[in-house]
Length: 283
Image (cartoon, rainbow, N blue to C red; front, side, top):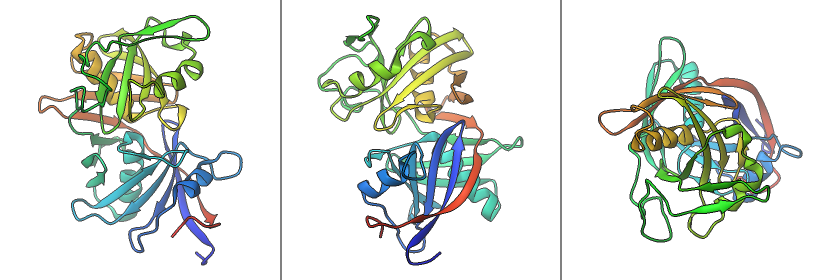
């Protein structure tokens, strides 16, 4: 690595892709504009989130998550699996802890090579989402009509380190998420913006899920959204606390365990390694 470049690793979890920098030795950090430049798919490396590994006094490392618009996210399940897989491959071992803005997440490698992450307990009170006013998060008083004329209404609100609005629909693939996603993300009801999920329950053990991520747009997979839909469907009585969640990029096995924590199991893959030319905004 020269003074003008910074090494990175490109990884993905079910197509949800990340550029990962290691700042554990020198505290390397990217300003929001620099993170957005890295994430740009035309002029940068291209990714759904930029990840920086930093030292932690509470866990094996701290994971900073920046969206393509430079804003920070509190949690990312797919990125957590990728980072755990990266560290397991580099250092050996099958268990570790990763600190995020949402807390410390225990991770382990399963016998089949997949990674399980304990994503913690969901937050379900309206102030914890947060919502702009008091209401029942199991049946949020919200209705929106898309430019194409379809209506989404009465989502379940869940916070899994970031806010989620889960809409249960008859056909998830029929929803024009690119049109309605940004409308919901920026609605005043969600003062910190919101991740938008449309979920189709196939049966009590299978859910089809599509996601518009806050600050990122449509992604092939979203681990925290898979957690949120598992919690939301269980609260609605549609599933029995566990399900396979099928997203555009593939499947995650999800469980809302008896201790209240949500467990996510899925793959992580290395795409390539490279070096990013620093043009300012990195330190």
